[in-house]
Length: 190
Image 1: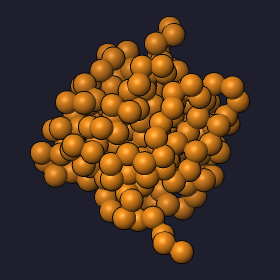
Image 2: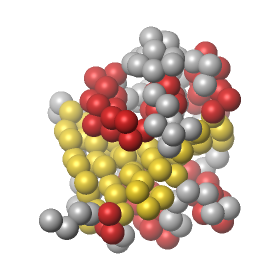
Image 3: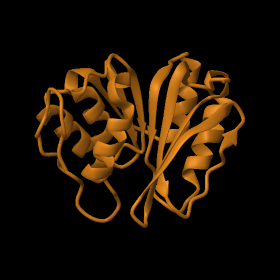
Image 4: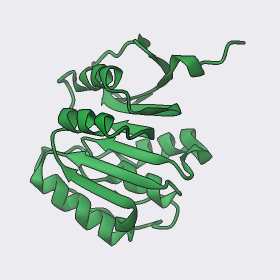
């Protein structure tokens, strides 16, 4: 696992020991960031179930403005801090050891908005759907923002969910799927 391009290009990232964290594979990350292209530049990022900080740190390396990384695991938080320091992206990072759902509420109360929200929870627990519900109740997305969810192929997510609509869905191998959501009002009407 490494930073693919940008200011921290080539930096190897550490992962917590054990099976509790499933970092996004480099090939999936590269494909995702090719899809995002220059959209990342100068954006504010929220990374839920951050694990290693892999996705946020890649975004920061490619020019994102700031990233808040949230995880409830002490091992993950320690790893994220190490990786953010190692990549020299710590000054653009806020790392929170906290419950994802409580953090969404707190950020909403502070009227904090994000251009990109990554959500990469443990598979097979319907957590992506729960996050979408929370983001419906406590909106954090900017008008032009996107939500990027990494989930198991078996985890079915809706094409429309309240104010969100599925912009793109991409399968990777036999296990992983990326679903990208935007606000319905942003859907072009051709």
